[in-house]
Length: 88
Image (cartoon, rainbow, N blue to C red; front, top):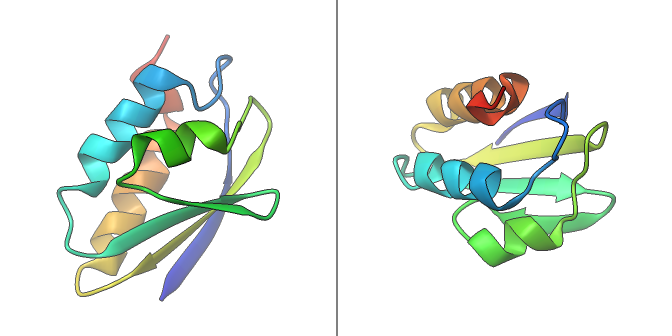
């Protein structure tokens, strides 16, 4: 398992469009991607679970990836979040 902590930087946080992008990205990998915010855990492939994290701007997200392509998945998810989900 590989992990990384990252901060949400986009002003709207992990909202609907951002969560949809994250789900789309996570489904491209065989590895299981989980995000943890304030003790709440969500599967990266579950839109509603991601929304329920209520991760607003400034929130620290711990990304946990387990599986055969975990390094690539972790890099891709980190890049998406650090780029503000491609918004603005």
